[in-house]
Length: 455
Ligand code: NOJ
Ligand code: NOJ
Image 1 (cartoon, protein in one colour):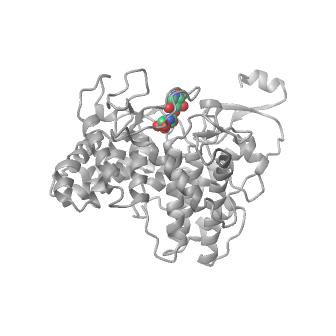
Image 2: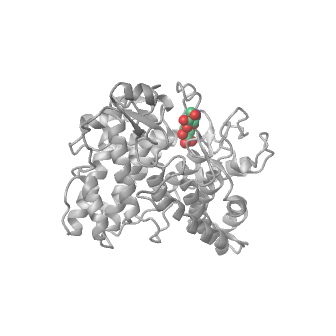
Image 3: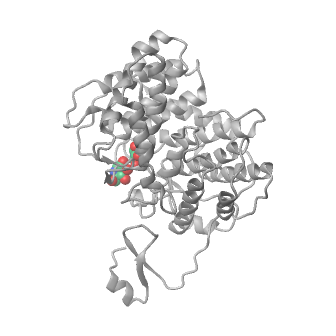
């Protein structure tokens, strides 16, 4: 830290970028022999029923807070450098309610989904105090639902799409068509109209740190929301003009992110675990950047390599079949720059999804070659053996999380410290629980004999 080119080279070290495509140069020791990490692992249930019940309990305690429909990012007023997390972030809220819907199922999820609908009705339809469109506000106070007025990275344009996506999945499962049409559809439409008209607008990234004209996470959210939301509105007989065109343009624009050796999140933030997270959460089951794509395999390869170098804890484990911790991006400094639980779980979900896709399709040989490198083992050509390899790899990821959290009775925070694996930052982060529950949900589907059904 703090070294410059001259000082670095005068120590006999090398000055250069950490990775192809990353902007900031680092100072390296010569001939450093860094261990390599792999994602292989053996199949073994990461969380038993008792652990799952606890995790679900902590998760549900953070939604529909005070009956307001809000999702608290974490019920933690003092997370340290991150400050107060007792707010409804539109992103955490929409993603978490999506996971709640999918993992709880209808009609069990209905009451809390209705409460979330009332929340969105309130926050989406009000004057904005910060001089932007209220639909692109990142966070709101609880329980009154007013936009936060302190300094913050605004706008964040994934909000309208993520809300519309969750509400569209909900409305599609509602038996009560009158309610879907009168209460839910107008909210979806209001958000999708924003996406249709403004998707090229510059935004802060999901980590609320950089601005870019094009961000992969956001583009994937636009695409999924326009497709699923548009289909739902059309079914209810509402106007969707311009949605198909916008969907086509957004889809074509993905090539700006996929042409290198891995899928970049943004030109100024190439290596980022947001990329595979987006490929899970926003996948449309249409073969575009799907679980058997070369793009996913290469992106996970790049991230595995980057985070292997980045965190001492991964180097201690290197070579073992013990999983790899993932963070937001190499060079992150937030709260010390650590692995994140929600992202390590998102990679587990990616691996389970590969296993699921192998139920009905073969993995192309070039894709398999990349995954064998990432998993550190040859998997053979039988699809059963391949499926086992990916389930085992996902399990190893989730077992890292289990082992880091079991001492706190599976309470999950935002991060684990990069050297020791001790939990740090926001306590009881809702999004951490959401991604663990979601990964376990996908695991259950792909390991059952029944056809895999998950979204
Ligand atoms: C708070 C944001 O939520 C977080 O993503 C960011 O890293 C820190 N501020 C530092 O900018
Ligand atoms: C910081 C993260 O960077 C951001 O993505 C998230 O929305 C907030 N924390 C709240 O959890």
